[in-house]
Amino acid sequence: MSEAAKGGRLAGRVALITGAAGGIGGAVARAFAQEGAALCLADRRGVEAIVAEVAALGAQALGATLDVTRRAEIDRVVAQVLDAFSRLDILVNVAGIVSFGAAATLPEEEWDRVLGINLKGTFLCCQAVIPAMRRQGYGRIINLGSVIGKNGGNPRPWIDPSEQACASNAAYGASKAGVHALTFFLARELAADGITVNAIAPGPIASAMTSDFPAALKALIPVGRVGTGEDVAEAALYLAGEAAGFVTGEVLDVNGGMWAD
Image (cartoon, rainbow, N blue to C red):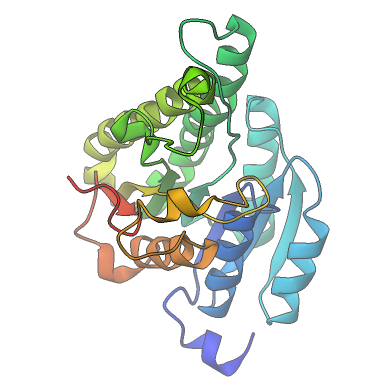
């Protein structure tokens, strides 16, 4: 660990990040590493690169293969973290998928797939870390929501009107609205245990999953650009740190001003 990281905001803390191989998850991993956290970076595949990257920054890091829809796999990864570091302070639930399709015609299988990963996966990961955090009397849980879970989807003026329904994010939006609600309930349930639970609701974020945003979408964002993984990572750093000890049950908007509530 670098000298700067030893005095960082997360020095001495241990974090589990799901979806760590993706753009947002990787940005969170780098930011946490630079602030001194020890890390378990989990994803369905491809975590080797981000593990090597944060190790090069001086962080203690281990990688784990994880399907967040399978409770046995989650329990295995949590046990690995506790075996390696003897504690687990922070969970960041980034794992998720994007889906398009109108609610009126969406196949049931697609609904189940999206809700299974985005909402059930978040729920299962939260459940799995609660016992260790309760024993410690300390924890930070950060869930990844979305502006689409608040606003019913963004208008898409660049799409032909006849195709607007097909461009809907019905299952995705429902899954993220569910993540927001889960965050509220867990925050109430766990506050007395010293565990805070918050969510981040990003707007459009440039990543491998969502790239090449049209100029018409950027025009809907008051700050004039789409977000980056680093924008989300800075929000996660705040919620994971001591400065946010009195913040729980919040959904923090990171959307460049395109939605305010």
